[in-house]
Length: 191
Image (cartoon, rainbow, N blue to C red; front, side, top):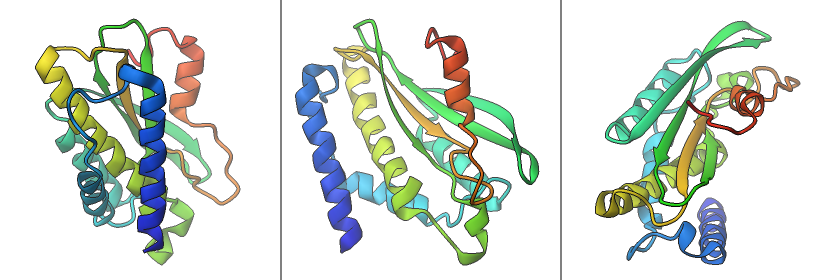
């Protein structure tokens, strides 16, 4: 029940943000489907722990690929230098084109803590719920793009980061996506 209340407050906050932003990120003639977002979150969390190098991590990546296989999906693969050595990671960037010049980025991470791997930590509130939310937002954006070939406002990119969680409890890496975006000076990343 507590998680549902937190989810409801989060969704209400997102709705408030959308109303303040005006037509730039509102969904054309549709209402956001919070039930679908919760369903996606449940399916995603059912994968189980998703720490990098785990079988669940590979399943999480496949889940994201399947959700966005008909969209403008980019997979940004990289190797992170971590306390356990080099680890292959992957960010997913889904682009929905808009008619206005500019981009709104909505981001989450999809992996779970490596250092919590022995307690079956599934990250329902941390990573799972926001992944479900962005997938449901993707459904709305896809429908809007299909109707008009481009969103009426700015482009929207959904970013699912990998490597946001620490490998050790004291690890303080900034993340590949942040470093890549900063290096490009926000020009055209991701390319």
